[in-house]
Length: 394
Image (tube, rainbow, N blue to C red; front, top):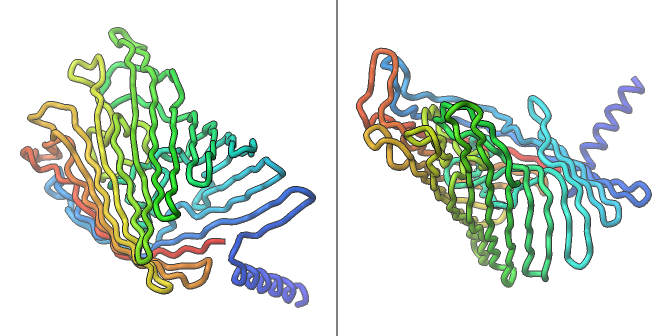
């Protein structure tokens, strides 16, 4: 009975501490500072899906799902500071545990810093507040997300308004779709990334960024020559603040971005031509580079404890293939409206409506058992999500 009492008392004390605190748990041992934090996230709602054109006559073309989903990015993190050296580790807590961030940073003084480890890429390091569809942030519908990768990063803070970052990154290397001969991806150079964060009068922040990556596909079968693969991207992110609203935006353009971009091709049931990635040419001896572009914009309007968000995104990519059977381009877009309500400093709910149009498959004709659709029947459908995002940060 006494043991049960003390367990209950400890639980109540922990709940009280978390509820009354607006920051993570901190601890100091000697000269070392520790900070424990994290986030718990859940989505509840309905997803109404138009499945588009189907290659078989007996396949349903729509469905409705009720979901109570863990987006997969609830997290627990630990930050350690010792003088000029800091360490940070964060794990995603879901059905399994995966590393999100793990890096060491060193303050070199004079506005200079060095970081080694896994964290956000410098390209398009800016997100909107669209939450449903696994904390999506318009990924696959305008948001160019280059993920979290191992890197060596140098930071130079020139003054309070200008910060420059440059990084060498261990990034993806893949074999383009359609190559029937065997190739081995051989890294020539790491991905080179850079961005410049410029703040003007605390009301405007502009962040141009870029990426370039080059590697070689070495032919490992007879008749397979070596192929150079070049990927690059240019982007501009921005924030413009006014008294009554805030505008966030992103615009980008690049070549073969589907190689390095994460969560970039979310189209359902696509058969061919990964969005923005190079493909084999007709002779299967080289690749056709593919260009793509996109972006998103969001307005945030604060009203007391509520912030209203509305935004939209769009992305488009070329398609390399015979015009009789392939589209010349494919595109996707999304739009959302959300209302964030802060119940406490650490806990908020966000009702949201989001719509995604997945456009057309690159291949014009879909073929299935017992039926072949004529060109033009390659619609990939759309998704409408209506629900609430729950988030507790500690």
